[in-house]
Image: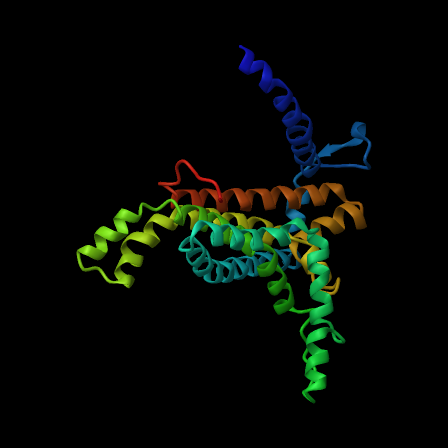
Length: 277
């Protein structure tokens, strides 16, 4: 009984800050009106409006970039996680700390920092100019937005994979080596299959924020680069069409839930857990 009482404040918090806002977004998405709750009318026009080719192109571009950033972070993050997991505990903690420290800085500031590097008069082009090379167009394109995503979300891929790798029973690897398995065989038959829960978690943690980001695309895309997150922001803060903005948000939530359901099917053995340290 006492345990239930302790849970009441958390339940109340969830109702006020999660259930109620989601309920309002759902209500707005299926209604139209002038903002007065007495004048709202139920309709599916907000969802039909999203079927316009312009908005479908924005959705596809967002999913495309999110998938690319997820694949790149996996390719970069898995070897990093393996390298860290094989170090002794002191070095391991220091290396993990180096990944975590940038996350303590404000997300907006981390993204702004890339402007000073990639800008027309940024540090990279300054070095190229000093070397008498032609300056490059490094910003306000797909590449800049993709780079910003990979940089900001890479720790979300590394840390889950690392936390699974350090829990792998070393006796399994030793037994395989004693039976004559080479390093490639040990990796493909033991390490990689056992690390799949961490990979699935990393993919989910990277794809979800990447597909809905708007800060990265606004700054590194020059404000003229529209992703689904920018479209939602525009509807709420720019045009003031909360009904259409809510409908887009519901569509995004459905896409994310479908993605989570697909990844969960591959995550059969993701039980328990372990600290990052």
